[in-house]
Image (cartoon, rainbow, N blue to C red):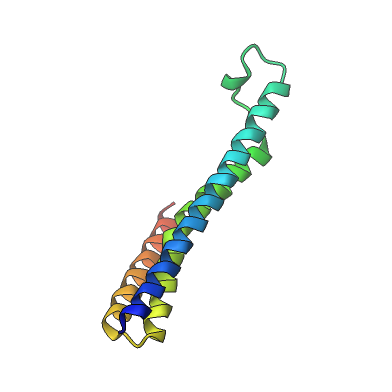
Amino acid sequence: MMPTTERRIEKLVSGILRVGVTISASVIALGFAVYLISAALQPAKNPLYSTQASPLATGLITIGLFLLILTPVSRVAVAAVAYAHAKDKGMTIVATIVLAMLALSFAVGLLLS
């Protein structure tokens, strides 16, 4: 593989990580803000210690965490495709094995939960 191809793959992968973390952090922050606002509107002595969270806040935080978990998985998937496109057999095999292990761990987690 040519060095320019490797550099393009590195830039693509780092961009995916940067965008994924930024989006997930933004969604989590939005969920936290919704939680604080909804807690402040509840009649309680101390709204920060309220045990009833807004379903919207909980959903946003959950989606943000899911996106955070999905970010490295998408990075591995894009790397596998990019290496296959660049005809780098070794790295394609490694990335595919890592992706298969991630999929298997998710499947086992779903089955055992």
